[in-house]
Structure formats: C-alpha cells, structure tokens
Image 1 (cartoon, rainbow, N blue to C red):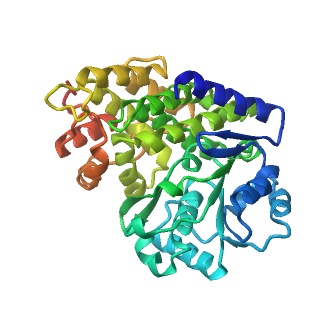
Image 2: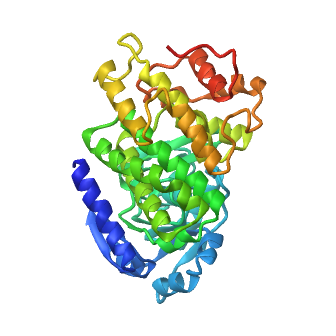
Image 3: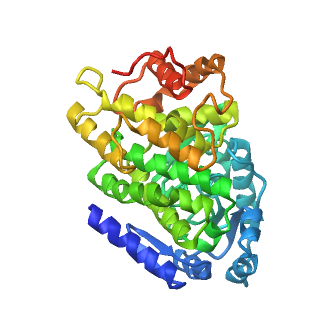
Length: 409
C-alpha cells in the first residue's frame, strides 16, 4: 500500500458518490458501498439473515432515509437497539449484546456515529457467547470471543470506526479500548446523504476528530508505511475542506471530509492514536468538551512537543530524526511547520466557530492537574516522545494559554 493506491481508492469512492451510484468497492479486505440501497447485498454477502441493528434514529430521520433502511431490511427478521448515550458505557454495550443474544442474531448492523458503532462492536463481540457478555463488554477475555459479522453505516464524518477493529467504551471514568481482529466491519456503507444532513456542530467535532487521527497516525510509534499512506491522503483532504463542510455544508466538501475521515480510520486501525487523543478522553469525560474539539485543543502543542524529540526521550525505535520528519509531514497537511501548528489550529477552530484554547473552553488552571493525573499511560506509550505527568501538564497549560508555561524545547 502506498499513497498512490490510497489516493486512487479515494478517487473511486468520490466518483461513485458524485454519480449517485449504488456501487460496492472491494478494497483492503472490506466491501464498501456508496449507497444505503446496497445494504441488503452486503448482508447477503456476509450471510446475515437475522440482523441486530444498533441505530441512531435521529441521524436516520434527519437524512430522511428511514424508508430506504426499512426497504433494505424488508423480509428479514431484525431487532433494533437505540438505548445508548454519547460516550457509551459498558452497561449500554452489555445490554445490546444481551438483546442480540436473546434475539439469536447472526450479524450486527450499526447505523449511526462513533458511539453507535462502539456499542454495535461490543454486541458483535459478545452476542455469540452470552456467558461472556459481562467480561467482553469490559474488554476482558476477548481471546475467547467469536464475533458476529458487522456491517457499519456511519452517519458522521470523523470517528473512522467503520474501518477499525477496536471499540471505545467507558468503564466508570475510564475510557477503555476493546480490540479484536474480527471487530473490523466486513462491510460498510459510506452514503453521503447522511453526512450532508449532519448539523454544523457535529460536522465540526467529528471532522476535527478525523483531522487529529490523520495527523497523529503520521507520527505514531505504531505507524507503518501503509498507515502513513492513508494518513498522507486523508490529512490534506480534511484540512482543505473542513471549514467549507461546516460553514456551507456543500455536498462536495462534505463528501471529501467523509472520504478523508474514512481513510484516517484506516490509518489509525494500523497505527492507533497518540497523546492528543489520550488527553481528549479526560477533557471529554470530566469537562464535557466534544471529543473532536478536545483533540484539536492540544493537537498543535503535542506536535510541537514531538518535534523536539531527542534520542534520550524517543520512544520510537526508528529514531528521533525519523520522528521529526513525520511530525513535519503531519504539520504540512495544514501547510505549516510544527512550530506554527498551534496558531494554525487555533485559527481553524475560530473559523469553525469554536473556542480556540482550553481557557476559552472554560477549563480552569485548577482542573488541568486532574486531567494530567488521570491520562492513560498506555495510550501515551504510542506517542513518539516520552511524556511525564509534568510534561503532560505543561502541554495542557500551553493549550490553556497560560503565560507561565515553560518552553517545550
């Protein structure tokens, strides 16, 4: 896989969407359709005859696609589930799994955003082994699971969950990643009509999430040449079209952000995310900031921190100079250097009508220490430059615009 192949795939998706074609593209081990009309063929291909459908009713209604969804499921026995919240908890996921098991589902469909897909993935993981539902909904005992096939229909442009093999679920205050190779959907529907119908604030938050995924994937310790190829196409595409997608909601811009977010999902499926995402979970859970917005508030400062990597604090076996090259590549997605990136992202946030710093987001200095204390050290391990608790606090203080924050390098 190289950037040329990733770009050709993006072009094929864009061409099918612009033509309004109900086309299925087979790429990277998945069947990707560009219209909800193809859902039934994806179900047939996966051998699913009793689908359990985790759904965001509001998103489907906003796109006026409920009749089309009903038509795709016609003549099949199916059961729907919508009892989850944003940032879903393990209890929601366990309940979905129990109902799927009781229904004797042989496949799962997710029609919604990232929270919907996370719940659906846990249902897919656990429904076939109901005695393990409690453990599996907490990310334990995944080696004993026999996941059901999953088909994802994302209604937002940002999480990339339709392309990944992991789900994120809250257990108490902690966000836990649950991974299994068979959790990556076997089929997906990228229907731009859902994305054209997104409200502006959701388009902004999810687009920022995808933007962060592409940039973090580029410098991630877990990154490979393949993930870098996906990120290198996704990053500039999202950066170029995000503001227009939010402000004007033009079909072309929404389409490009949708495709970019899908490629960013493919990138993090390989590389996983790094420090900006690790910090965002606490900012979201404790302080109520939308996830993608929370990622963006620290992203530029994490990039600048990583650009200062040395052999003494480098966690990437490829070495400090290689990390710096990839950090600078990521910054170039926005036409910036790492040093310029914090200001560039602040301008992006302002253009999107969002608070541009943690201080503007009503995050107080006294809250920053708690965020730094609770950040998941495992997730920080995928960041290419080591971060101590004091380093994390320094990045948060700079993101808050505190004048006394020490310099990074």
